[in-house]
Length: 287
Length: 316
Image (tube, rainbow over all chains, first blue to last red; front, side, top):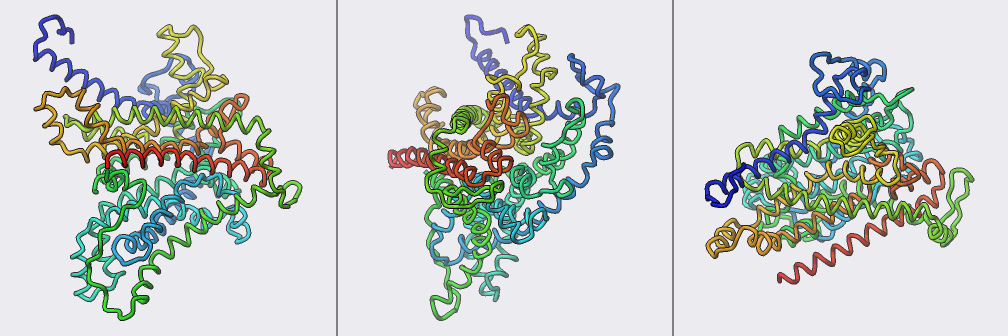
């Protein structure tokens, strides 16, 4: 807008503000999306184009699927994906059960010392991973669980619990008390009430709790690196971190692998976008 | 402020006016609720509490997988830590990383939250777009930024084309630029999380206040500085605290992008401890570094805690 000359018309001023706001919002969207978009573009470009200093902005025409073929056939990325899925899905499912039971007890039952329990849960979530890794390693060795799905999955259960308990607790406690009462009059015990009444009502909190727990496990590197010692057991983050070439860095292959492991996550997050925002912020918003 | 007490400390529960189950004796009423938290407590105990305590204990021994020794050595590891210049370099760099990223993420997050608070066409899309960096695994972010900031990468192409530099900059090979590059990657990845928390905080401010301020003739600038920011402050501090604690643990970015180099210029506490533990196999000394980290985390939380409590007291 060039209309900011002396007679400041209200309309012109408003136009300027509208445009600069539009620019800001566009800037935010571009800043958020561009780096990953560039990774997607890179994954379809032949090495010949990637090695030139002047970038090829779009992989059409001349795009290639070679990098994706490399990821699955040369690098054999499938085991990483399988390992991650097994470990993270099992950990998330079990943690969700544990977290639901605990959050239900803290939020709705006469549990003594609720504040202490919740404080402990929050404090634990602040422990640096590096300060738990060697004892975990020793424990898993002594239990013959090092380098096994059960071992890493068990560790991830403990790691995703604090956030899950917190989110579920924040949702459970907003449900009207009358509902429990009605369930009890109908003869339901606490577990039955939790399963058939509370969880369905608190579903907007259950979805983000599960998703956030899953994402945390899916992205975890340090413990996966240390507790899965053989290459055939390693998870996706370790696979991506150790992705190297013989002569030069295979940017195209890395980009393709990144896209493969990230797209499912991005799709999930976009589908449940509203639920996640509500779930994460529930504690802060509902007072 | 409700939002702070929510995240910082568990708020007091509203009283249970639900009629108790028809169990006769009070202690029997407690069995159910306590049993329900047992699986969670057992997990936390096994995976977090016991390991941390064990690490603190090991920090005062000379445990090593190489010499197979494991004796209590008192403060020997503390003295070694005091004279370990690499440790202090990592400590400084980690604090620098934490301070810069937390500050930048809070400011940028605030701007994004303020923008996304307004209603405009396509707001849902922009809110979704903002969540994308947050959903991307840090390892992937690390690889993405290595490529963007490579000597033959896009950033250098743009810098050269715009004549800002005469020849490509070796960002990740330079002892002065590598750490800032990692900071940029972290800021990109984590600002959305910040924006999300701050947006939630903004939504707790009654919209009527803005109306009232406008009627009283306050400019939107005044409204921001005198009404919104003070009311948002508790949320801002808690969000910054969570961020700082997380940034202080940074491991994935330096591990993948630079491996701590060049010349240890991107070594953080986590990567340094990891090297000592898993390459040096010096479990005792490595545990001391991890314990030092733990202590620094507690100190960071303490400093923020004092600020937050003071804020709440001020507001009564």
